[in-house]
Image (cartoon, rainbow, N blue to C red; front, side):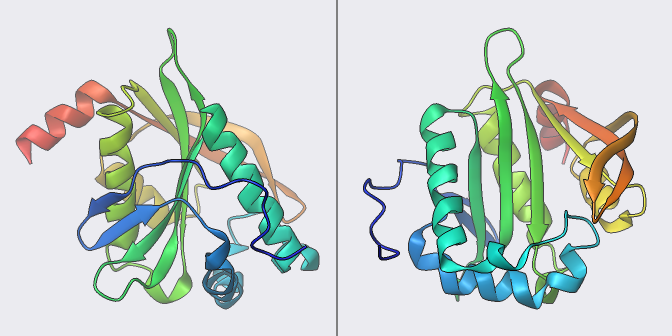
Length: 200
């Protein structure tokens, strides 16, 4: 089976723009760029993510990942978007809303990563802000949650910089490279986000 043979087209999803980046869902044609950036950033990313098995970087694994993303998007349970730099369309990383809930909760969890060559240049902040704008306006969500290891100071500064508030500490929250790691639990609600935007 070729990489292009997915059996169904990608789901319709938004293209978000927030200078200096733009975001869209992942496509099969992104395999080389995505894999290249992840490999180049392995030493950085695996400090904060579960360890990668060798087979996770294959074309087959990538195809399965894309299929899973598309299924979740169609179901309405997630919105995974990849981040590009405007001007040269360089792939920079990704931001994902998952565990999207409507009804009385109207909430989701956000996660993100930026490739090592593009750290501390404002790209993660722009991508996260674009996602928050869309989640609170177009999707009508009320609460976005995030979890971050206490040692990941750049990520903590990013969350706090866009208005997230720390709500507590979860012990042994995720298994990262065979170690159960504590995480700080953050959240931002729509009213606070809108007020911060109006006062910016």
